[in-house]
Image (cartoon, rainbow, N blue to C red; front, side, top):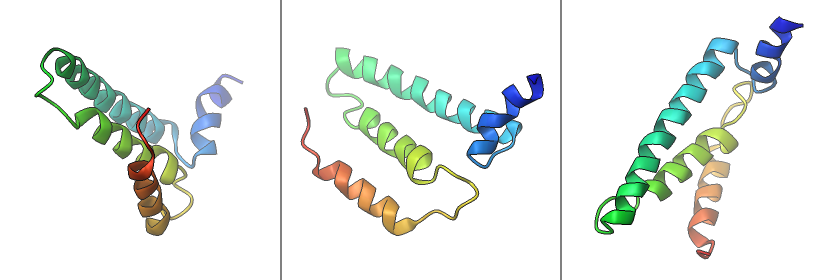
Length: 91
């Protein structure tokens, strides 16, 4: 029961527990750094103008487009997703 709690979700995305931990730490670290850059941008609008947007785009590509390690990434889908993000009007 306990082992399943640690392995069920990572297995559902084609990762081992340690692979999933590494990915989560990588995502978390990038989000912390980008969050800090966004806070600095709030005080100094001339700094880090695209850092937050690029971080979100990169993490989206890694998490959604290339989500499952069991399937090969589809470069055409990744490009289409990036293009769609550029065409979406800002709210």
